[in-house]
Image (cartoon, rainbow, N blue to C red; front, side, top):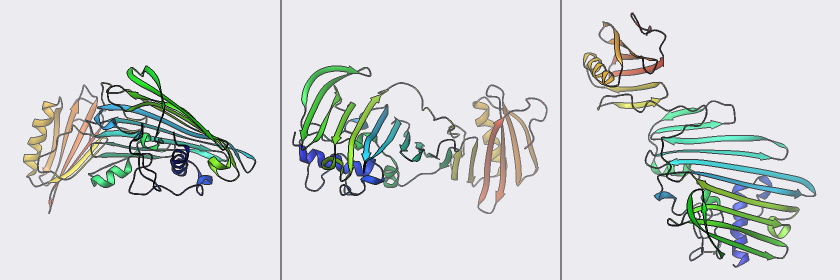
Amino acid sequence: MKTKPFLYLALTLLVLLGCSFFSDLAPSPSNDQPAGNSQSEGVSTEGWLLSDPAGGLAALDSFHQQLTVSFKGTVDGGDYEWVNAYQRDVWTKESAYFFTLTTSETGKEAVEELDGKVDQAHYARFGSGTPCQVSWGELDPEADAQRVLDPARSLPPIEQATDAGTETVNGVPAHHYVFSEEESGAKVEGGFWLAEPGGYVLRYELTMSGGRDMFGKGIEGEQRFEYELSKVNAPGEVVYPEGCSAVLLDFPVMDSARGLHRLPEYVDYTVSAETAAISQFYQDQLAAQGWTFVNAHDKDPKNVTLIFINKDQGKAASILLSARDTGVWVSAILRPSESTSGEGPAP
């Protein structure tokens, strides 16, 4: 393995993944290239044994990634350490993922952030203990792709390594490779496991240790990358992080709906139809889903409220139909049912 090109890419990644004191170590990668599998300052990964650590993942139905990047050492003689912990769950067929990043650094409070998507529902949480925010809407594909951080793309590529045989990692047959290089007091060592078949990375371990030649002036210590891929093609539905709820994907809406928004316990849209036709649509559709029609507050045909109960789910649905110049605004709210008899819950 040629050490200098490898170390250059590793140092470049420190700028992306490390904390503020790494900012002057090396130039950042080009915005046109993903970190960890690109060309940078004339260094090409073409033909390397592990040229793209994220390769092969797109062919999987579902998986869980966990990456911990950490540094422990000294800065200008003082103890210093930081940890960036990444977790990402992906369900390809459902167009769903959840990504969390937890960071800690000497002298600073730990920070946790969450980003996720299920269909057109987008999730975000900024800080542990804060509410999970949900929005709905289709994003531009390019902008949507830029939201997603694949932890595997943060792994430095490997030019050469020694074959260490076959093993099973998280239930998947894999080929194990190891590498070790030392130069001018800087040492790089580790290993990675590639799935057979598939070629995707199941496990990756890398340790970089040294002083100025590795990390920059006044910095000495050890940097570690620890990556694990599990739950490959595991059966099951999308699992939501604690505090985040599914939006009402299965709540019926009319085919000609405009401005549709789906949120947890709430759906609204505008449609060009008579309130009577909309009312009949929901009586038919919700009955097929196990709901019981309770009542309609329809003295004013331009402002109608429909009440439904689902005893099995223990929920009530209030659907407001409000006629406007642009059409009828339909607003459905689901909540725990307080009563399953008489007139039902008030709108």
